[in-house]
Image (cartoon, rainbow, N blue to C red; front, side, top):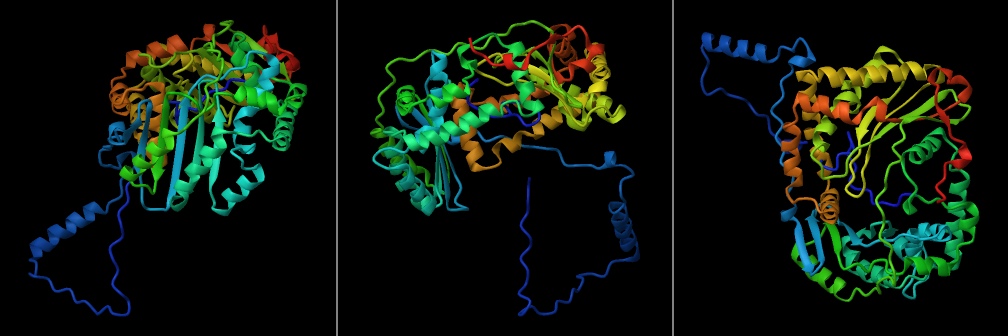
Amino acid sequence: MVACRAMAPLAVLGLALFGCSSAPAPQADPVKAEPVVSVPAEIPSAETSAESSAETASANVLPASYKDVLFPEFVYVAPHPRDYRVEVAPGIVGYIASDRSLPLVNFTVYFEESSLPTTLKDEAASSMVSSMLRRGAGGGISPHDLDDSLEFISAGISTSAGTYSSMFDIDCLSKDFKNMLDLSKKVLTAPAFDKDQLEIVKASFVTSYDRRYDTPAKVLSALKAKVNYAPNLRLWDATAEEYKAVTPEDVRRLAAGTFSSRKIVFALSGDVDRDSSIAMLKDFFADWKVEPAPQTVKPEPLSFLRKPGIYVVDKDITQANISMNQPFVKRPHEDYYPAAVASFILGGGSFTSRLMNRVRSDEGLAYSIYSSVGNDYRDTSMVTIALQTKVESVDFALKLIYEEIEKLAKEGPSEEELVQAKKAIIESLPSLFDSPSSTAIIFAKGELLGKSQDHYLDYVKEVNAVTPEQVKAMIAKYFSRDKMTISVVAPVSKLDALKPFTVIPLDSLEFRN
């Protein structure tokens, strides 16, 4: 399946762009406190008292509607990467976000490197590399000893190897950070791929394979990929038998070169001192020795079949699972921000969106319905409209969706809708930086993807610049009925109103070529 790094998810829309509190007043010691008598400096006149009473009364009057409640203007400037960025060696940069409030440290290191199997046999072993880099232990340390050591100090090490990058992550108490660096270096630069641990990992993969179509949501995900994407090495699916046949040597061979990239980006946050951390990390990376892979295959971008239509997997359920998709853009792209605002108005804004109001609130056809635009810097992404509805309501629900798309594309948004969409998107920005760890990691991922250092400042300007005409154009361009693939998981016998459609057998959803 697609092995890709999770880039920073957009909460409302898959945007990869994207309170305040006041301390209570100190209280007097209840034992030592003495009675306080308030004495006015001047006795107010009757006229002054009347004016004061009128102002107080006016201030205490409740607004007639929530729409009349006034709030101060929202002003938020995102942190800037340059304030956190450091370079510890040529090709090794990172972001340090210090927070001394708790004695905790998070350290994540990303390596830009390609990892892709070239045969179906290797797909199974390749998918196990991520787990075995950590679970197999190494550097003369057994898996059991590593687990005991980490548990004793309440620390953790996790690893991942993907299509475009690999990473490892350390969580620990600040007092143990130096020792954790030494421990991780031993384990990750000389992984052992313990055979007993591999058997446990293999059993997990086999179980996952056997249960891959247990739920309608899993079937829908596989169907959506099958009818939208052209065959690609990155989409290959291994079988249970192929997982069972994996050996430690297979995993070792496919893991060769992991954590050896010449481009390394890290994120360090928590109870750390910036200057001393830089010195420590210079020593850490100075002798980080991993031999590069003998041969690597450059991943090919995903491409689309571009065969619009309705595709159905027959499943005896009462709620049809539906996904409507169309190719979108690869970022950076000038259409991204206008399309994100347009999608928010159409279906991304929860109960403020048109699809939610029409399909759920007005007609009661779905508990949830939403639209989103993809946010990908590696591949061309997709736009999505997704919902669940009674099997008997599928045709009617799709009819309502088409009507709302056509209406928005023709008439555009109201002024209130456009203002609300921009406001909601921009005001979601602080959630991306809600902790030192989030801040350091989002900047590190941005560095890997080549984002501008002013990315999170520019996006506010871009969102605010979206016009009604752009919203109309984006809906017409990317939510076109004639260009969409519609994936449906439901009983075929109850979908006569949807014909013509193509039935996709459940056993043909996997990518094997």
